[in-house]
Length: 269
Image 1 (cartoon, rainbow, N blue to C red):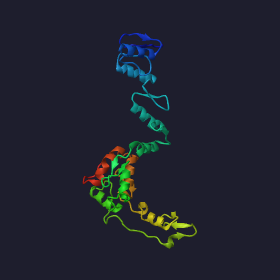
Image 2 (image 1 turned 180 degrees about the vertical axis):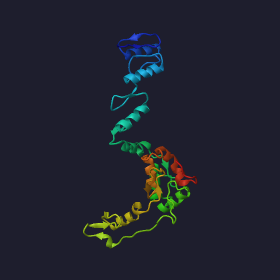
Image 3 (image 1 turned 90 degrees about the horizontal axis):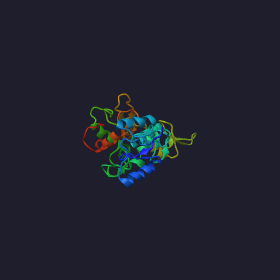
Image 4 (image 1 turned 90 degrees about the vertical axis):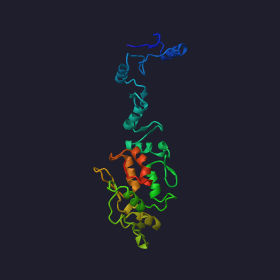
């Protein structure tokens, strides 16, 4: 059974379609039926009846960009496109998996650079970016804040060891310096004693040796079901941002990061 579009004020019907009805509404100041379907010409006596109809026949206003599913709100359509299609409508891009999509949505492309360094006022996109900026000595106003000094500061704000390790003697600050004996002639490169990775130049090997790659872990995931160890603060912040173990949400980490880095408050997410 077909239905004509109807004027909700005077009851006149328009077999020619919705455009004829809308012209009538504009010229007369009349209104469409209060509980009219978002897609077809049917209308109902209550919002509940209207919703039941649209749900039954897939007639909601917001249609998925990749399939024929419809949704009551734009947000619900977006959630569907994210979870079912790994699709970003703003960029018109599909991603191989949901994790790749989340990384894209949380990048500076969508978030901009909303987090300000408390020391040099540089703006960064995420909490991980801010911590890496400081921890890698990239902040010109906090050049004395190394991996070790940051650990001591963070540990002082985490007295129960929720996510910092309790190191009796403090973090190992051993510095390594490779020499000519590190060159492996048979493999044609400078070889790491610990992991046997090759480097083309000796300075690159020394940089690797003194990076967190072979340092002891200073942090651990606060989720007892996870407990994954990390050698840097940036690494554990990135883990929490990923939501991979379900301990907290990405947005909670963004809100908490300034207190973690620059205040005297105890750490919580």
